[in-house]
Length: 96
Image (tube, rainbow, N blue to C red):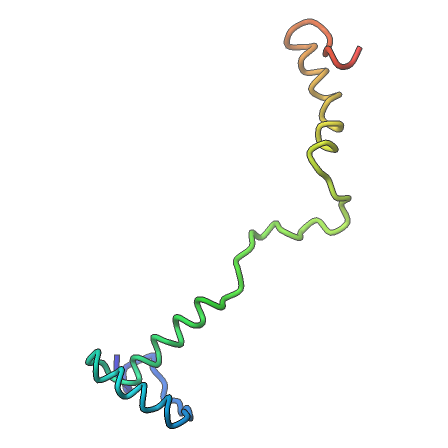
């Protein structure tokens, strides 16, 4: 990809002398233009430091009380007791 191709815009960056020399040496060693090396380095940096993707539903319930597995079991037990009683014709052992 070179300047002048659609989607590529020119920008100016200022580098310290040592960093500029190291970039020149590296670009020559890998036989690539300096601009391409810089674009790749920026892409890699941005990918590494991107915000983690969170499912859309996370944080969607703001006023719900926190729950843990024991709370859920307590809430579900009466429902499962009724379900088991209907399914097997008896009562849930834990609940008379």
